[in-house]
Length: 170
Image 1 (cartoon, rainbow, N blue to C red):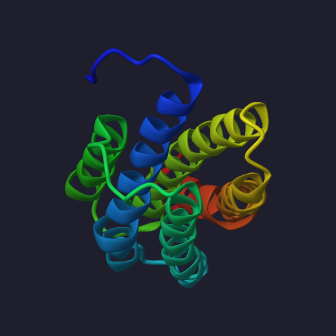
Image 2: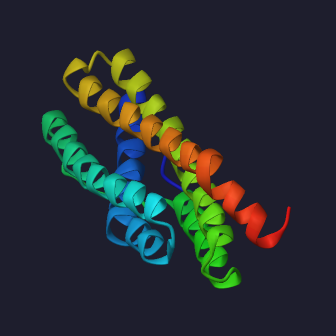
């Protein structure tokens, strides 16, 4: 995975690189693919909105790296790759429908929960390291990820799950 880690600061920087890889993959491929494969306007709108936020997350992480005096870089995020693969399976195994949209919401919630865990850890590490200048932007991203997760859940509960159940049977 990675070499001998000797400090919380090193671990923090490695985790930042995972986050950066995750956000770049989502901005460049993951979210655009989900938007393209979503059939409901509600889901498309939510995903498009989060794509714009995700681009801001990339920029914000680049600012965090600069503040730390560290060259921005990625560390291949295999966890996200597996989640992206699951979303591809949903798209390829379910025809365009409310059922596919429900599956895309599941995939999106899984990614959001991962990002919430990732950013929660980064915020905690930054606080422990006394890095207030980077704690604030990381906390902002954490809050945006929580809101994106809640929005997807709201779409599922208020609209998509009912449509999927009525179209394909419970």
